[in-house]
Image 1 (spheres, rainbow, N blue to C red):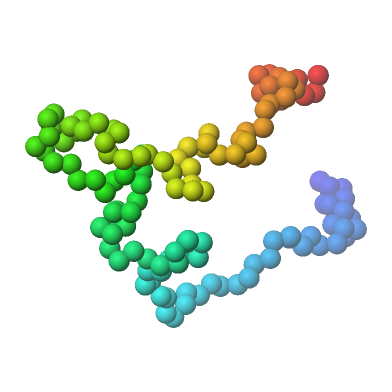
Image 2 (cartoon, rainbow, N blue to C red):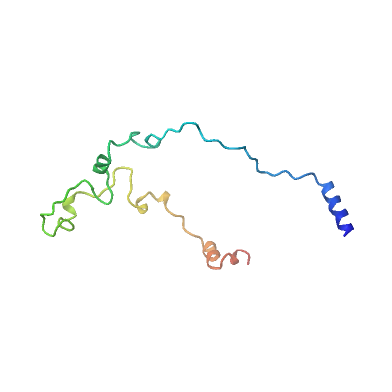
Length: 129
């Protein structure tokens, strides 16, 4: 038991004290005043907020124009009362895409190699065989 204590003291004396790599900055403080007013995102194309949700909704397009008002007097009610062609084109504006598959090929997924497929199928064991 005494020899273990002597060896431990000798080992710690030979090695300098360990300094952790993480550095703490100190206690955090919250700012005295925080501006909670809404503002446009810095990358926004218009750099302005819409006047209201209704004005935003009138210009937005998601799987077709959303600003069309359908009347319930059409045959078949509101849903399915009009053909899709009569509602207007469903095309994304220039530079925008509805689906990832419409992007240029440089944004596509790179094909897997046979070695990568084997590594996935064997749980990584084929990498060391």
